[in-house]
Length: 490
View (cartoon, rainbow, N blue to C red):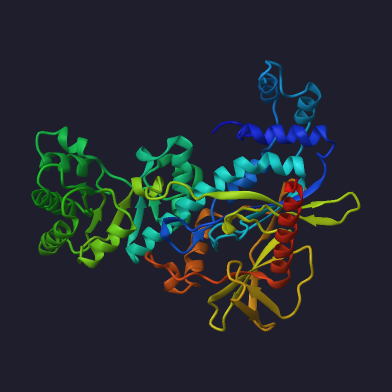
């Protein structure tokens, strides 16, 4: 966390390839790479892009420090000799990144095969960035997406991120808190995340506070005396409804002294039944504005179920299943070469084949154009190759079924999603505030039909390839397969 450069936050094969490019005198060959994912997580219909700022900061600060190079010199091959030549390590020690980056702004709703980042520059530099960029963008996009689903299930109620103690390490916890806020959570229990990112911080006391006193009532009274402006009492240490009555008693004392009991928290048991009965007790005692907070292994599906049962819960504290993306712990993003520049300056599109159609990459220097209908709702996304001019009007072909296509009228409003972020290794402009990114997420989700956002069997949003790009991809696939067949002939 305190390291100036994260140049060694990479897989060894990125460095062995970099060495190979340098050895072959190809280190400066210009290239275009794309970072994208292939399948939506959580059986859902979308992803919220996140992690761009830390990714750009990594590129901005990227360098091989003296101790990095010293360590690389110690790595040996199977013969016991160093795998990197001293001249190459000297090259790395003087390396300054000069890449260009175009990226989807954080908080944007995106779909499979759409590039979230496009990296253009020398092939050696682009290759060195692959692992770290995937590490950052994959995880934060996954957590932001999970958070958005949980917030959607809460349907206007406040969602607090409570996952620090269950997160995957210190950096994982901080990244999760940041991404959860982007996804729509209103606050975090993570105080360091509050300091670093400006996220509102919330929390009161645990069961151990109650257990450290002779009685629950005494513990609530002591807490109210110590912190009268932050009283949400955890009421399920012994008997939940009796705990509510004790909270009410202390709440009456707070009211008489000019303060207010904010609410109570339920952390176990039948949350639907207990919240309803607790609400009745609170209302009867005149605490109609006291909120009921619930925690205890919540996720979007359980919250949705509790609301359907009429639970009287106004604030949801979600921890483990949010920050660990419990039901799908990885997004599965990839980073693929789209084009390289030849010695005469022309660009050569590149494609990766696979027996699985979903794993065949798309060639070119890709951009995503989002078209909107007359009401301003997202209608279709078109992936196109910026190395070629666009025809008018554009025809968008389904990449998995060419018989399905749409013609996009010239009069349709559109937005190109990839925005300039870095030029020649330098970050462009100021980073947006985390609050503005969170607001963007909320606004973005409103542009999509509820059928795309639903949890079960979501409608597939329309994403396709511009016709000429589709034809280029099909042609390259045929050529690659024919070449392979010729090579395999005896």
